[in-house]
Length: 296
Ligand code: SF4
Ligand code: SF4
Image 1: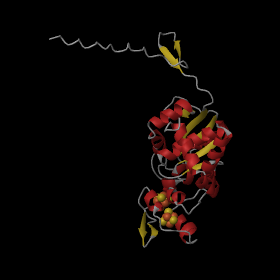
Image 2: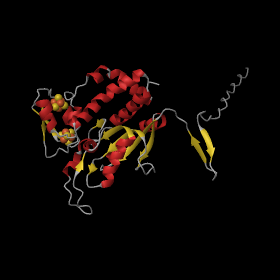
Image 3: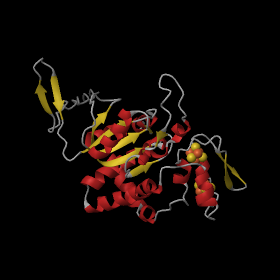
Image 4: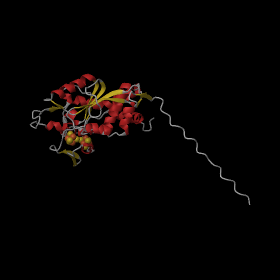
């Protein structure tokens, strides 16, 4: 009987050495360290300005995980952020994300918010404290070691604000979307600029609406106007569960409300916006495309 022919030996293809992306330059520093520099054109510059806040809004931005790296890689340079970078003075920037309210008895804070307005093209009140005072509305001073620090105001009481992102803290996605939309507005094609303007318009309208927020807004501006449809979005959005649905309408426990502005902003009957609704799919595609979710 004939011997079976030996199995042909299949050779694994030689592994290709990993190539350095062409856009990465390597610089040798004097002390021998190698440094990589990635040139990325047309990024916008973004800063995080920390007033009297708790850093929860910045944590919410970081909660975008890889999404934040994508934004920092492709769309925005973080040029100022005392929590994350060693830049001491407020620089010129395209977008300032301002967290926290301003203590009127703290001269440095008052000066810094005015400098922010002078140096930023777009000022965003990031979170309930910057937008509406939020929990700092309840400050009355009298605590050591600065008992005179007693008056805290939303940034819009001292400077013009362009965009408001309400809530305590704002959702990670909404901060991400504003960053991407700011990029498309400043650097995008005409079509992208149009989508970005539509997305940002309600948040700009909120900035114009004023600097006070409370669960009572639902009562005055939605329920009493005959607009409430009992959807429960306000109750779902309240971070302290101050809203319960009773007989198909929201009931607000005012002693629990921290005045973050989320409920009114989330209510679909508060500033129902045809610009956004009509372009919803295009807006979501633009964001997904920018973040690399099937759009690339
Ligand atoms: S009721 Fe809740 S969501 Fe509305 S402003 Fe008060 S704390 Fe914010
Ligand atoms: S979100 Fe608006 S419409 Fe929906 S239940 Fe609350 S107040 Fe009513």
